Image 1 (cartoon, one colour):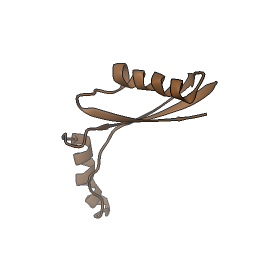
Image 2 (cartoon, helix red, strand yellow):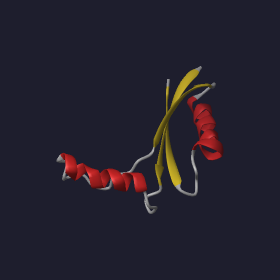
Image 3 (cartoon, rainbow, N blue to C red):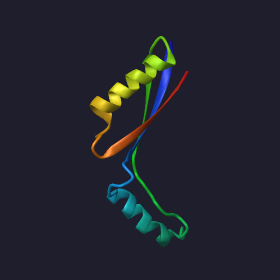
Image 4 (cartoon, one colour):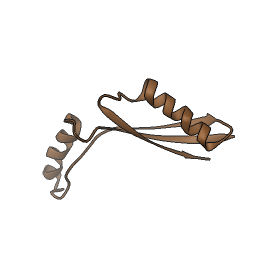
Length: 82
């Protein structure tokens, strides 16, 4: 079966996010004064051939742990759909 993995990778909450800080500092300059806690990350989608959604999740998890995310600085969230 074909599954779609949607992977969201963000800096861990306790770590400095220079890109997020730069965006947060720029938002008031365009009139957005009510935004805070801006974090910049990556969003990745991939099609996976797997027998079950659980197997597809395991495949996406492996990709995150071995290639996509820097586990020292980033966390990730995986959503699987058909």
